[in-house]
Amino acid sequence: MPDAVGIPEEQLRQAAKGAVCKINIDSDLRLAMTASIRKYFAEHPDHFDPRQYLKPARIAIKNMVEHKLVDVLGCDGKA
Image 1 (tube, one colour):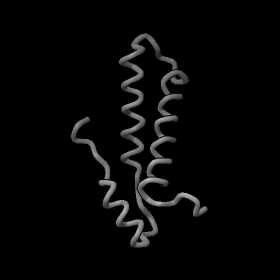
Image 2 (tube, helix red, strand yellow):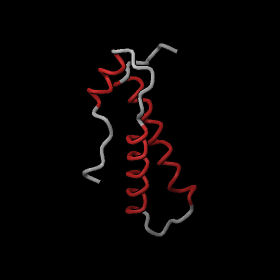
Image 3 (tube, rainbow, N blue to C red):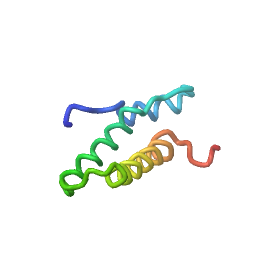
Image 4 (spheres, rainbow, N blue to C red):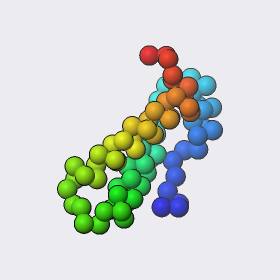
């Protein structure tokens, strides 16, 4: 998926610093999930149970959300 990209992280950082109230990161989350599922199927072509391939996909999304909130948007410790 070489042409599939979300908003560049530097633009997200600038928006967060500029007090933009709503910043969408869904494209990045869908890319993380899709990449995880594709990788899983490449490594386990005989698996078909969604519980098998969705577990690592959920972990990929969780990791991406954590990265975006902490490393990009600067939300760490602000809840």
